[in-house]
Amino acid sequence: MNYAIAARFALDYGAFRLDVDLHLPGSGVSVLFGPSGSGKTTFLRCVAGLERAAIGHLMVNGKQWEDSESGLFLPPHRRAIGYIFQQANLFPHLNVYGNLCFGLKRIGKKPADSDLDRMIKMLGIGHLLDRMPARLSGGERQRVAIARALVLNPDILLMDEPLAALDDQRKHEILPYLTRLHQELDIPVLYVTHARQEVAKLADHLVILNEGRVLAAGTLAETLSRLDLPTAEDNQVAMIWEGRIAAHESEYHLTRVDCAGIELSMPLIDAAIGSPVRVQIYASDVSIALAVPNTTSILNVMFATITGLADNQKGQTVLRLKVGALPLLALITLKSKLMLNLAIGMSVYVQIKGTSILN
Image 1 (cartoon, one colour):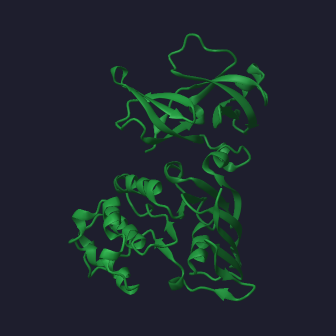
Image 2: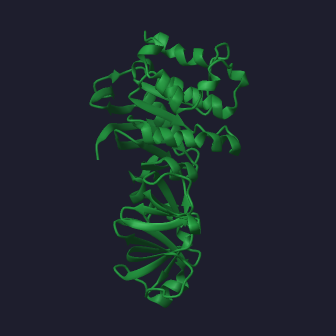
């Protein structure tokens, strides 16, 4: 993996201490996930130069932005960042187009010499250009704020819980645009959230923080499949598979999705053959059999190998499995584990009872 961001920050507020050392990829979305007070926003502010850590080292795309040992500290205005806050913070006296062009004037660029048209199209705000911020919904304001940040051509886009201030309807309105950014942007995005669904929809790389320290960091699949993390003890634990639409079976209202050579039958998806999709599979929707189930209504039955297992305090066992090259989790009762005499290395069959598309 191409790690283009190297960040080491240590600062002490007395009641709270941040101590992180991370290498993050140069493209895709790196999600910082954890409970309130875990240090997510503080880390983001350090990257932006809004906080100066006692120990601070930051390298972005081969450029040193900060080095406490030598005294180097680029102020925020000299860091090529786009920063999206919970509130859009648009200029109330400027219409949408004026807001988009404000930053361009500051750096001496004309709209025609920027990616303005591309960002307007990508974020679906062309019909809003003459409106004043007061006449925009919360989701529309955030889309304008994202476009305003991106037209400056930043090296990194920082997003601090951009959906937290929105109601459910507005979140559903803006998520497809965030997914599109995830697919089309070629710069790294650092995205702060404590919402699992945003992790599932957007993350390529996942950093789990707690009490100012990194519990885990890695690709989404490898981090979600770890059984030594608190996430594995949640009844809503799920795996995310990346795939493409392989075929439609319209007569059955089904779609077949290919995930790294593993084919899933799913409810009919309104998208073209070859379209990329993310599939969410809850561990509680996966059951285990020692032999091929010959009579079952479940369409997705696959050969798998047990690669890990962990018992929790609720009479349950989480299994980590490998299906082809893909990780999968199954949540079963401790009694079922003992009855089947399940152990690491065993070959089994998994039945996936439910799946859902995330984009």
